Amino acid sequence: MAEPAHSDEPLLQTPLHAEHVALSARMVPFAGYDMPVQYPTGILTEHNWTREHAGLFDVSHMGQAFLVAEDKSHETVARALEVLVPADVLNLKPNQQRYSQLLADDGGILDDLMVTRVGAPGHEGWLYLVVNASMKDADYAHIQARLPQGVSLNPKDSLGLMALQGPSAEAVLAKLAPEAAALPFMMSADVQIDGTWCHVSRSGYTGEDGFEISCHAADAAKLWNTLLVDPEVKAIGLGARDSLRLEAGLCLYGHDIDSTTSPIEAGLIWSIQKRRREEGGFPGAERIQREIRDGAARVRVGIKPEGRAPAREGTIITTPDGREVGIVTSGGFGPTVNGPVAMGYVAKDVSTAGTDLHLIVRGKPLPAKVAAMPFAPHRYKR
Amino acid sequence: MTTRYTKDHEYVRIEGDAGIVGISDYAQGQLGDVVFVELPSVGKTLSKGDEAAVVESVKAASEVYAPVSGEVVEVNSDLEASPGTVNEDPAGRGWFMKIRLTDQGELDGLMTEEQYQEFVKSIS
Image 1 (cartoon, one colour):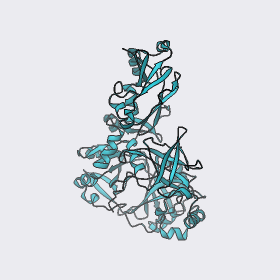
Image 2 (tube, each protein chain N blue to C red; image 1 turned 90 degrees about the vertical axis):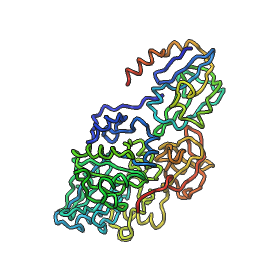
Image 3 (cartoon, each protein chain N blue to C red; image 1 turned 30 degrees about the vertical axis):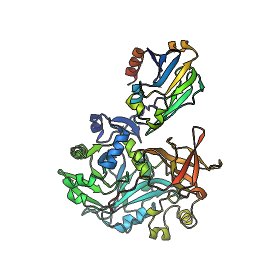
Image 4 (cartoon, rainbow over the protein chains, first blue to last red; image 1 turned 120 degrees about the horizontal axis):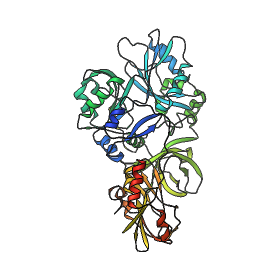
């Protein structure tokens, strides 16, 4: 068997690093951080626990930053960000969160991110951004270089971030912060948990109901352990995070979306609100509006291999008669599906659910079908 | 009963003129939950070091290399339905294939149980 590659680069640690080590996690390098890929029970158990109970994930490696308008006007800060992303930021209500993408001038995706209009009193004209760990330096430089006078970006390395995901997440949080447990999907609140300030949003990356909880780095370990005391909660590593999000049909930056894919090709049109589709005014608007009108030449689809063999990222996709029509961008084993699942880009003419395809795995064509996503139903609290 | 190991964590347990091939307990632990195993066809001739099988965990696919040269005379088709057996009992029910050895001398280049345990200690 082949040995995993080792890197000699010094790795960063999240504020929860010691907690992972104490839980005997298997640590691996991820986006420059030493991160838990799994705890001793393993990925399958962690995945299923999250779907059936509640999983606690350390996502402190992600980039948290505030975009702040000096004049304390939401319109000022919203317009500054709308130059860079296709979401309607202007019409966000206080504490409302939206998923969006930083776009390049050709409409390619530089990163995907969460944008929240901060609702805490005294923070008018503030947006809270969460970006991918691997992209945060590039994102910050990109944003900073494009801000108007009077708007500034403040990265907050002093914050930790964890996600509590699964059907028991609400009941667990209700015992600690009832007002946070009452939030609807994609809304947030500032609360105290056990005397610790937290910013809680009802969102996540598993397809399950759940929360993402930001707090001061110095308080992160205390909060983590407070949540883990509940018998419904177990620590979950990056391995299960990946299988959960794949079954939920959610994109992983650098794999399913990148600077060569547009939001329309990626099936993210739902994240571009009507006003922005019509008005444009974001990078690549001409291409994106054209793709909305005429359709994209290739699109991201779910793919269900018919046998048991997983098709991994990079697998070539052909028609049954051998015409190459695309490539797998994420693929593996879906524990909830109890079989292999994948997503990838295919030509528009073979993108309808049910279309027969072949996946070329180790030189052999394996039958597969285009499948509707998500593979495991979303259970968000709308 | 003689068992020999490779540095790639395959074992071969000699039974007469054939060897039962699988992956070590250390290897299954490193892989994590095994969800798929691809086995060679019976009758296939392998040279030592050839890719003999593929074992897939939730996260990744890994090759299993032939620890010895010879003909595949039997495969553990139970692994198709129950790949997790590789995690539960790697040295027993989680075996991969049986190879009829063409060169018993190849065993001399492999590690004994004791040498392999030392090797695992040195890398973990």
